[in-house]
Length: 199
Image (tube, rainbow, N blue to C red):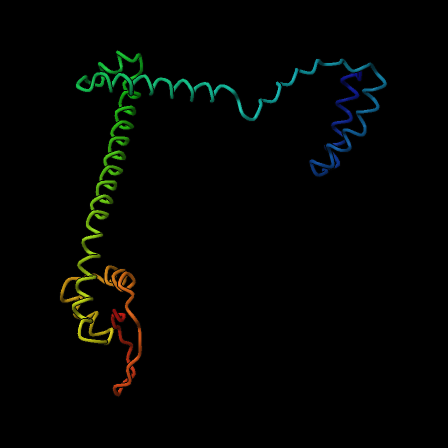
């Protein structure tokens, strides 16, 4: 080992040189390294074992999610079987937390709203399907009456249809159903006309 007096002398001489701290450290390292190596072998310190790297996706969160989903399903089942029970009673029956019971109730309410919207759309669709033939037949009767006396300009027919509350879509369907002929008239301004086919 290096005697303390020698070490003290080296440090004093180094301080007298007024070197930058980085330079002083480099000189000290260069001088002391060979001296320390020659005096005695350096003790080997044990290296602490490194912790194993954690896997990117731990199975624990999946288990927690599955357990949470199962708890919510139990709470939903308890709510369905006991619709008038309080949330505290539902939580106790299902063996879940109060928050899980609240979330289950919200999920059930959202599911109910979704079903109600789906049912309303279905009924609306059925209603419009039932009304569609009626509108179409009304539009056909209108076109037969409007074109009974010969060809008419499309703009006049559409205007009359609007006054008779026949929508444009039904009018187009009726035109196709009746096989209305499209032509052009040369009465001053060239205009598109509709006429019924010859019987």
